[in-house]
Length: 251
Image (cartoon, rainbow, N blue to C red; front, side, top):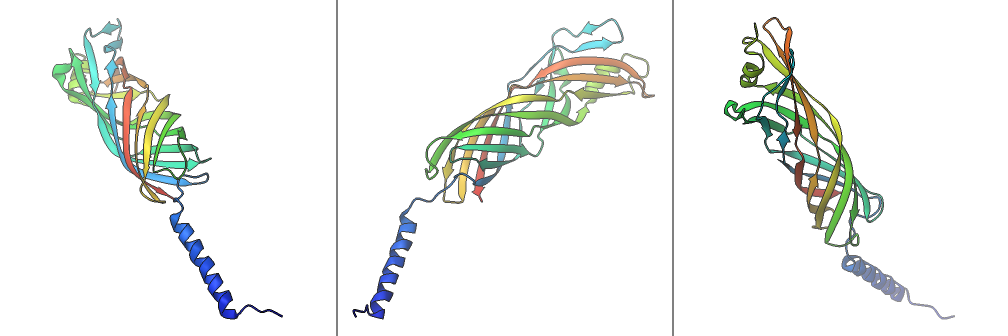
């Protein structure tokens, strides 16, 4: 009976193992495949293409519009996070969130001389469906996306310059206060960007989003006793462009 020497068998196993290890190193590293999760941390920059309607007093009667008045919403920066789940190698869902940025509201038109009118923090988490082009192992992967965001505001603070304008001429208004209600809303999100894969786990990402966004503001003036004495309204269009530069980790 012919027998293979034991030393020959060991040498063949070693050769096969070596070839398998070499193949593992020479195959392209996979990333962003179906079932992958990617966490991104980076910086949001919000550039507002803003406009506003004139400030209008709705109470007390008669209704009066401050002709030529307006407001300007400044740009903002904040820390951002994104969680992406790949459903297939090309289709993914992303949840965007971040530290609420603080926007500054400045007077414009006939209100420009009053300077900063107030500040507010904006919350706008979004979910975006994305299509990634190319193959999962590609270094560069451009993508496009479409989604929705829910926007609301907190920590709305109005400066004394606006208080003087809206309540100063009424009894007790000069020592009174003002507050504002900003409407919440749902808005669509259009998104495009690119991912550059550093290795199987890490990547660098850049994206740009556009959100057609409008909010209605009601400014409520109270006298020193806390009684409502005036109401004013205006509408603010923000339409922000949001850039996001981040580092991603796949797990």
